Length: 113
Length: 115
Image (cartoon, each protein chain N blue to C red):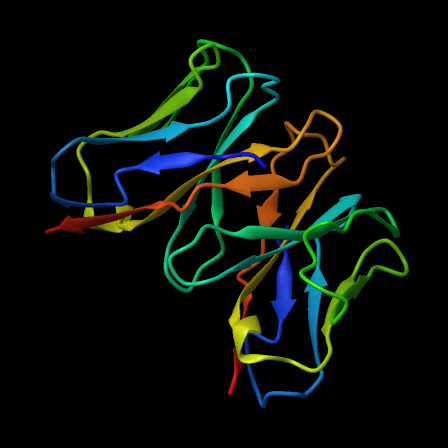
């Protein structure tokens, strides 16, 4: 059974603050790591799929890094806005041949105006 | 283009009843996944299809749950003799080829409430 850990569980920040989250995953047999953002009453939105050690990806004010050797990924949000309020999920595929995802519990971010 | 759609968006049923949840994936996507999310948890895998066949159904909790994808596009998740513990958000996703590095695109989910 894969174990994907996310921390912290929830975060409350002020508009304009920068923040970061951690996702930990098994470092052996790494295939890919997925980050999603899930706003209430909407579909989970794919942010990044990361596959290479040292990968760094960026989408607007959101960026992510990957360390496959030590089994973690960081997600950064620069200058948080109220519209960034959502649950952020990371997920790990079972094997290279089986793409079913094991998700962490998610991190709920609230950004106060 | 159109994303993944799911119907109904909400379903309230009584314990013991049968329900069907429908998923329309993105056109051309060969892989289709079902997950469910209970309060305070991340989504949990149920089953995934590659084309018409179930490639992995190890996440189905018991034999009350069944899913089909007869023509390799639309899928239906069927739950017999529903129990209160089945209450959750049921999510469907599709990906182009079902590779571990393929993005899985999610629908908005069906919120199932079993009274």
